Length: 208
Image 1 (tube, rainbow, N blue to C red):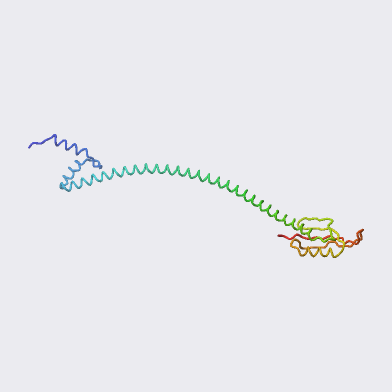
Image 2: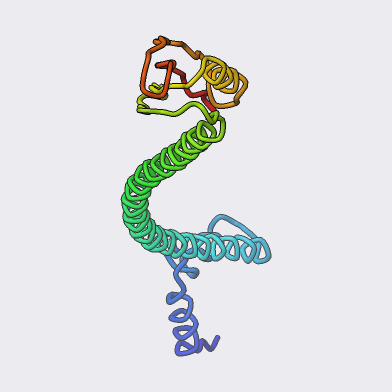
């Protein structure tokens, strides 16, 4: 029987170069299967399964290596994002502090504006009260002194007759400017013009 040793060797070398991934070659596995009495068809199936298992092992290793690399990149990216977020939070905190400072200053400014408006409104009310006093002065009555402090008017004057003084008091009581009117002094004195009523009246300015 003629045997082609060169051909047999070439096939053997080719088979030997195919690793199964389990410490041997396809040829080793084939010879082992033959010894176990496994048929050629079944042996092919076993060899295919072995090749698939080897391929799966190889792919699993590649996937693991890729996953580790991706995980490192992801972790690095996350750390960079955390640093950036911390910077933004610090910046926002500084902005909030600055805003709070301006808000306090703004509230104080608004309060002052309201106080000025209220004072202006009250000053206008005071001026209107003085104008009203001048309007209701009878012909035979005049003021010698007018004092105003803490919403209280103190009026010192004289009248040529009692009726003029009485009419003046009635006008004050009926006004929208004065209340709590008190006669602190009312006496008759002889002067060069005749008998005069010397008076001192206190009145409180109404709150608007």
